[in-house]
Image 1 (spheres, rainbow, N blue to C red):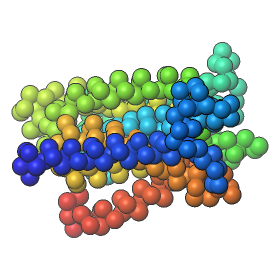
Image 2: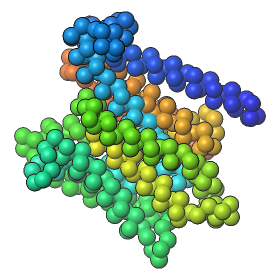
Image 3: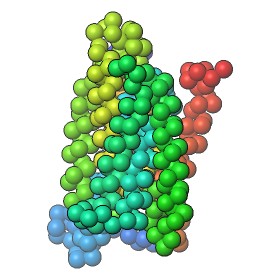
Length: 342
């Protein structure tokens, strides 16, 4: 693929993603029920503060936070997944490969079952989910460190072991939860509807700053994809870059899941599809993943509203799995030689 042809292809993809994102933003902002939605003029008037009382409440206080947090969470999980796939040189890697989702789930479960002094109840769940998510990465990294060196194979094995242990602890807490069982289960499925503007004010800057720093490391990630030896030959400090990428990805994941729960397949499917479309260069894949990830979450959120209105809004983690898993299985079957299958 020539450079001009590649640039044209990227421009078309960007244009399509932006157009689709804008359509999804409108659909989600205008949603009221399966039989009613606001018109474009009503949505615009409400956003500008000139709408009716009911439209401003629904659009600005209920729908808009859901849309905004969805965009940032999708963008963050997608770029974190892209970075993890590059670090581990494996298209099957995801943002949760080191057990981060299990760590966050443990913190959330603890917050719902126990009262912790000095921490306000309103921020207890996201606070503990953030802390335990980050602590999980620290534990996995320390377990993988041998004589000052950390191998990707050791990271993966440690991540699987720690994730299994933490998942068992979450299952135990769920078992003894009693009347608080619903809260733990619902959080683990992912939910955009509980996000507030105050939470967005914290999560959005964290995700954006870490994402921008990740993008600046795109060339180093390209080198890491060639292997540690080749990366060192190209002047990359493999140990420093790998630790930086893991830290940034962990902060992004922690900021995302601590407020909305565990949402899967975004960081797995989105970068994989983009690599198929435009190649492996992270300088293009990482920013595109952010746009595509936000768009994918908005699509899934709208589907969550309309798929089973009788039962309410489907947890978005269920929707992303129902869509993402079949798509990923199809891609693996179609391109199994490229991902190492025989």
